[in-house]
Length: 80
Image (spheres, rainbow, N blue to C red):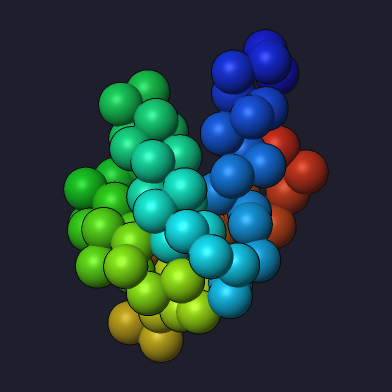
């Protein structure tokens, strides 16, 4: 994994509740979307959650039963 991807991977895995974490996760989600690693439906969840620092987008994805491929990646140590 290159340095830029690693930086975005760390941002997308930020814990909920940290100030501005929602926006950071959304920026990282856009990075992965632009590289074809995250689908539009999953990106939309990150967009909606971007102003909700305390909301965990992964939990929203699980509740809505979408983004299973992305959730599998989040469970890994990094992007393959």
